[in-house]
Image (cartoon, rainbow, N blue to C red; front, side, top):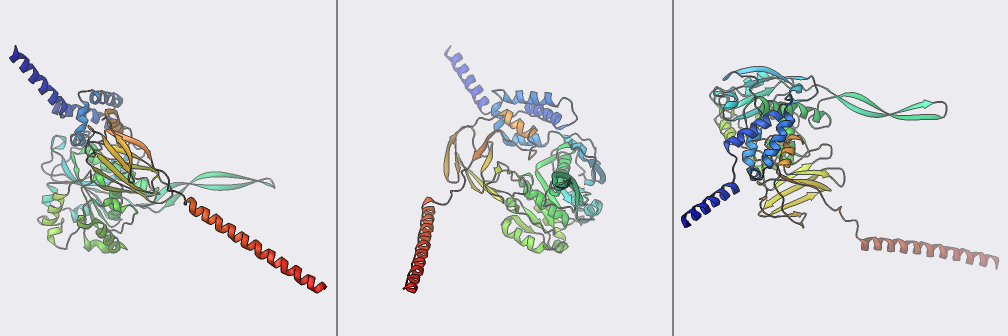
Length: 498
């Protein structure tokens, strides 16, 4: 009997330990991947049903612990929707096109691209492959770009390479103006009128910038999420001239998505380039003269990036054009890995554009102009330092802080108290499905919204009092001077009368 009781006790302990350290099994991963694939297919009529089933599955009390497996969930999300629609030919470069409507965007625009697929790539059944996404310069054809910069057979056999046939044409933007109309002799009616204006393409100004981002993100989603098996931790951006400005600005707005950026010239200026601090950048100086101000822009980048900024010296070792060269380039590419969770990390938001950091979203600023926040996590505490921030949202997962335990939140040196946040399947799915995910591996399982910061203190009362006192003294002095002058006038009149 004692042996039986002992065996039962051991079995109970084993079950408890197994449950407490629950991992995502292959079967569970397969189920989650299928549900997400249905959701990401905007044309599937069963999307809402798939979402409900996934929510119920992850909300089960025995499954909720699995939300701690951030990396595993990220990998599932990153490769959940590939459908092998194109059946690409391995080992060759092909020309194709895609449409914005493929991403559920109401537009008839279509975009050409060329793609190089490794010989061993076998579609969604294969292991995830690293990806290089390229933006050419103005007037540069995608086919020519592929031939000039990515003709290296060793790299082509290891990377999915896409070059967009991007057209930097003028953009029509919607604006408003005030119109005055005369009605009769005396009455003037004022109304607001909508109109369209054609403006030059820009990577850095709204709304042209947002228009470009929609197209660029559409291509990212097209290749990474829908049609190819891509490793979300090894996506590299590459651009030449105007395209270099594009990839740099795009990376600055979402640096956590990428493993590195290759720049061939360009002269990008952006108030948020400091967001690139954790992202490896490879610069080709022989192309630095292709755009005005390129050398100055790259000098500024090098100063900001430090060891993360590398220069590709002239020669075959850094060339991706020669079929049998590029040893140094190959080495740099091989080391490039996404750092999704840099700690501490600084995030800058510029007033004209709405950028969101990975863990933290700045909602409101006190005054117009750039605002910034630095987030640092240590054992049991999250410390946030802000400049010109009135409120922010904080997103949490187990790579930022252990959600099994309490943590202390410190904002600008002041403790806001200790908190215990439960992992929530609903919040995880909400970020993936409802809130236009900022990353295909975007895994947040808890959140704290609308954390407010007190406005900067006004001038101190003592100073104000001193000011009032000085004003009073000034007025008293002016009054005495006036009285003195009046007295002198009366005395002179009196003497004249005498």
